[in-house]
Length: 168
Image (cartoon, rainbow, N blue to C red; front, side, top):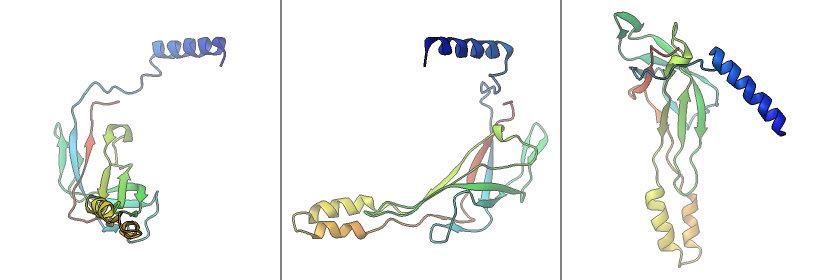
């Protein structure tokens, strides 16, 4: 990129910064309100889960901020399955990551949180076993067929997201 183009882009950035158009969010406030959620139906990597799939969470408790109702216990909070990692060889666990929670009347820029649940990690005993069996060919390679545990999100699990009321 030429120096002239960089100079023009820098000038435009500074002009927009002076107008306040680029500084859209104010992250100086650290005041946050935790919102506890439970999933409505169990979710497991044993089942067919598609990334981007909508799931529903239920508010576990009523939350108020400055006397104003934020979330009522039992409210349905939709979210999206962001990532599904399947169980892998050598004991690597499966994992489900849920993000993009939507609460009515609250901007998504004021919510931060994702919920991640992993299955049983079997690597801690598979790798020592693999190295112990390596001198006896090919027995060390047989541990490749040990897979990690499936990830399961149960209704009893509590997911916590955070509401930052002072952010723009």
